[in-house]
Image (cartoon, rainbow, N blue to C red):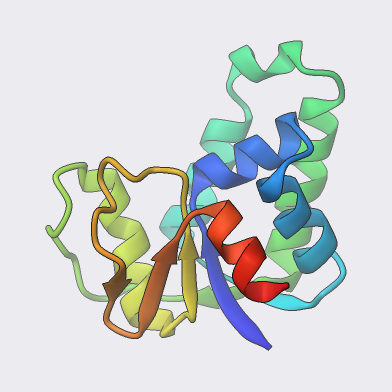
Length: 137
């Protein structure tokens, strides 16, 4: 089973629209076809971002966000990130690379191609949701 890391922007997109992020989260993670990797930092970021008031305008967003967070808490693989990195200019995004290093995830799926300009970090391939969906399928 592939181990993947989902950037927060992918989780948000999955809850807003039925596109590639939705397919990854619902058709693959929820059906346990992939193993999601998280750290305490990333889980906290998911919680903080998904509770932002601006998302409440989307139908059922809050209820779905709460359900997704609970599911991740119970089913995702939790990794402790020991090494702090400063590879990317956006300090918050370095936590994803720290998790990639700690977990040896197969893929880091992100919609942020401004900061994630590299195709690989260690053993982890960095891809867009569409790229991941096409690779997996």
